[in-house]
Image (cartoon, rainbow, N blue to C red; front, side, top):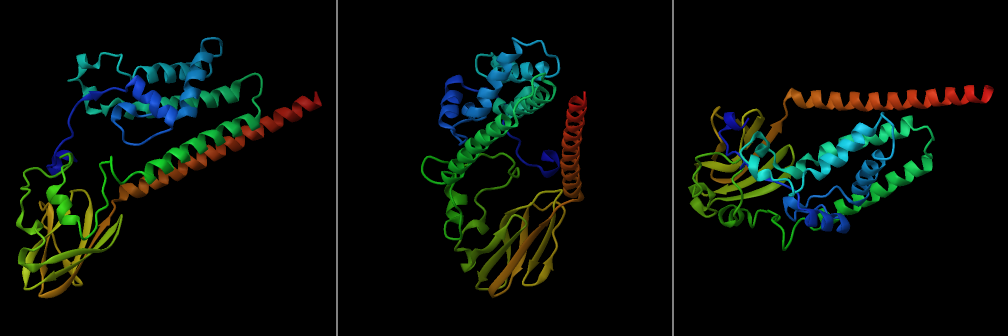
Amino acid sequence: MITNNHIEEPFKSIIALSPSGVFMSTINNEIGEHGAQNWSMGLPVTLLVILLGTYCLVTKSNYWKMYGSFSILFYFSLFTWIPYDLIKDSLLANVQFLGRLLIFVLISLSIGVSYLITFRKKNIKVSLIFGLNVVIIIFSLSALYNYHYNYFGPGTTHSKINSENYYGMINNTGTFADYLPKNIKKNNSNTKQNDNKKILKIVNSSPKEITYSAYSAKNVDYQIPFITYRGLNYVISSNGQKVYMSGNAKFIKVRLHRGQNKIIIKVRHNNSVYLLVVSMISFIILVIYMVFIKFKLMHEQSLIHRLT
């Protein structure tokens, strides 16, 4: 996709986790953007990884030990005490932030805990499992709420964009060039609000559609500051008339008539999105079916045990 769209590639680097930074993020239950070196899984999950890994050392079980050992060993291998500078030009540099690999720790942890609950000789109380999940959910929701509550404002890299500050933001705010079109001049004449006395305002927006209101003192071709990418289907209309784009266009150009104009841009997803939805629903159904079979077997074993 990067090659086909001629967009800037992200920088390549290996940024490992900082022990002190992760410790403070874990204690404070933070998931905010305080540096990629400070990413945390949350206090309950981190403790679960450590406890499960420690338990692997004193047990002889083979069902889940591999997953528990992998989760704790892989977790501690993501920190700065590993000399990753020696392989900074390797394929791993495409990952950039090793905190992104925490997902594999969580997957291994989930499998290990599931095996532990299923095959442990002494049954674990349902109330204990339920209580642990409640604690994890509470900590997760608390961290998520604080993250979104403090998403905008001083000390962050995010600002709310509206019709009044749009042009000032795109002209004066610094940002990374990742995934932006290559060879595009920043000082484009159409990005100035007073050019040809045109005023472009966002009337309504959603993840799949955006509506602009544009005023022009005369009939003129106007370039909308809206970046397009290959592989996505755009449906564009200006004053009710469909606008056609060339295959290589990175921006949308429309014909504005004298007076007020209405431009609507819609994005239609490819069929791959529907395949993703079907696969997710199938996975959920499979998990529910496996849980049902598991409880059915436990019930049958309980009846056999009572009869004997």
